[in-house]
Image 1 (tube, one colour):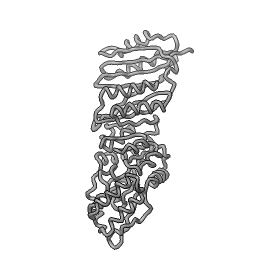
Image 2 (cartoon, rainbow, N blue to C red):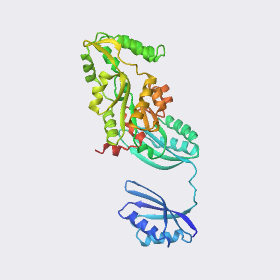
Image 3 (tube, rainbow, N blue to C red):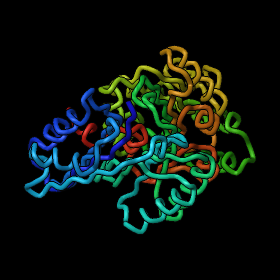
Image 4 (cartoon, helix red, strand yellow):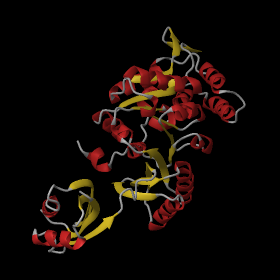
Length: 393
């Protein structure tokens, strides 16, 4: 028999039984049963909006649907009902993207900039989820649009102008499948730079800082700069490695990030230009089993000033991410990389989601998303994990 589609919306102060009454009223619309197409609901401070798209036999009218709902008790006690006919396929064009943005606080002006950019991309927002209100404010939007490139460009520019950190990703169930999350150590998982702490122990901090500055200026590459800095550590007692480890400070939110990833079935890993001897014991305490880092050569209880392994440089970090993904059996599209330095760029570029964490502009340009807040657990919001899930133990 011919059919048509109705969009039925119940709204008003929430109370027990609204959903049950509404679906009961819709179930009897057609003699051969009605077909449920889609359902969405949101409740804000006790105010309910419940939308149902249903296909019914032609001949039903919005007035009859509303009257049936009234008789079954849907309408009343502040709840009202609207019923309208919609055309099939009216919202079928385009594909969905997830737009996640956060900041210490988000104003209506910032929201206006983002939504204006969405509209300018001929896209629409289908759903808004408030993922977190502390320690940052974070929203996730499901956006439907025909041109993803234009959407990414316009929305990213608007978010930047509004002072928001943003990630734009394809929508789908893949976000909650098994993931590998690879992090840099120095200035990402850690607040410190391990080589700087070692340099302080052997009174060569100034020399090490000079070499680091030269590397950052592009005067020498990372591998050569690392060799030169490690050479200055020659003669340092190996026991100092334990002292330095004890001084390390995790980034704010690092323990929360790792604990939540592990509880939800994600696999965390660390790929670092630092040193196994310092990082491995710390990561064991944190439950992180996958680590790739440089090794210091130690003889007779002292550092020789040489490395005992191939240097983990920019290319080495990317190779480690690929190897870890193969080891645990996930495709690169389900990997996440987080880092702050130029030697993280390759790793960020090949990961399914590359996140620049308090990074320089050149690094942010090569990442899919960027975080400028100091909380490492904000990475979880880009995975669609809400504050409520994070706090659930």
